[in-house]
Structure formats: structure tokens, C-alpha cells
Image 1 (cartoon, rainbow, N blue to C red):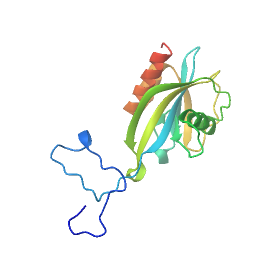
Image 2: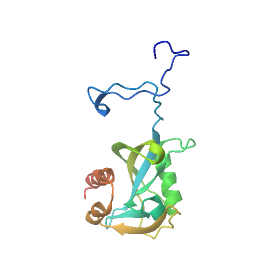
Image 3: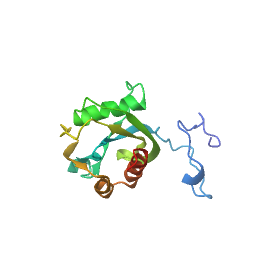
Image 4: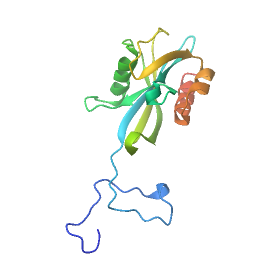
Length: 170
């Protein structure tokens, strides 16, 4: 609260502390921080022979290769339900096998400085059929594990894929 200010200024969201701020930094309680937007990423794969589906974002959305991803909608009852919905929306795959929680989360700053918290999953499908990709993407490819690791743009995506590869024994 500022001295003499009325009504008192109270942060709407928690002010970060700890490693996000330097030891001599003083948090500004007037700066409001938006809440984290929950998001999921699903590494769609086929076990035998192992292949992973990568999608290329349109140039307007960055033009990089990634897995299926998207925000968690208020109507999603769980993170698993959200990743299943995103797979269906971005690929039109309706037959989805087990969803594997990769126990990997990370936060990144998206457009308009909005913080996103991503939860990573592996999503098994029965075969490496061509997806019907959404307008968010311009291309797809089924990759072997090494090719996928070399193609993924973001380090956090590569770490999530490494976790999937460890789980499925690749």
C-alpha cells in the first residue's frame, strides 16, 4: 500500500518473488500480473514403428515445428480431456489410445505478454495416417525420434519429447 493513498492499492494477482527477481529488486505492488493460462501439448505418436507427428505453424503463427498444442478451455473437465480435444481439433484424429502424462510443465510468455503454463502429454494413435490439419498449421510430418528432436524449435518441447521417449522405451 502506498503511504496516504486512498483507497489502498492492493495487487490483484500475486507479485512474484524468489528467483524471478534479483535479490536487490523491490516488487512493485501496483503492477498487476495476469493469471497463468493453462495450456496442453500432446506428442501424437505411433509405437510400431515409432513415429511422432509434428505440425508446422503458419508463418503468421511463427512458422516453427511443434506438437499439437492449445489452451485449456473452461469446458474441459481435465487436462487429459483438453489434450484429447486439441488432438481432435488439430488433426481430426478421433481414435486416440492412451494419454501419457509426461510430468513436464513449463511457463512461457505468449503474445501480449500473457503467461502460459504448458502441461505435456504423449498421445498414442493406432497408425501414422495423414492428419487433416487445422488452419493454425501449414504442414505435417511423421518423424523418427532423432529427426523430431532435431526439428522441434523450442527446448521445452524437446525436453517433453525426451520424457516421452524414456516412457515408451525409445
